[in-house]
Length: 116
Image (cartoon, rainbow, N blue to C red):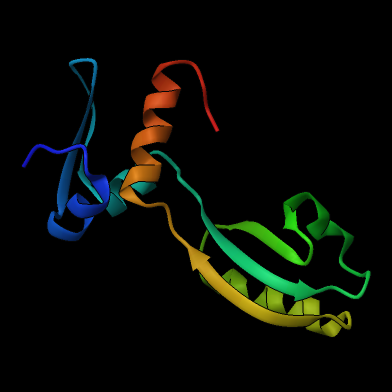
């Protein structure tokens, strides 16, 4: 299947090949591509830090919302435990994994000299 509708392709397909300007950027299963190109998973948090945990400031998205890069899910409980033990409250915690669309546009941007 050839498509520009990456959200639908992710629901239908199990293996992918990315092409940009006639050049094959990569191919494989999404998990393999994410691992090979070191795409990060993130922990999205809605928390009240109570003024503690200054280490989280660099990951701040908005008031009480943070996007923290993680390498594996075992880190999540430690992050949440640290917040709670320092007097903070956790309202929401969820994992954000790169989508097919995220991966494609990051790879194209790298090819064009832009990287997010």
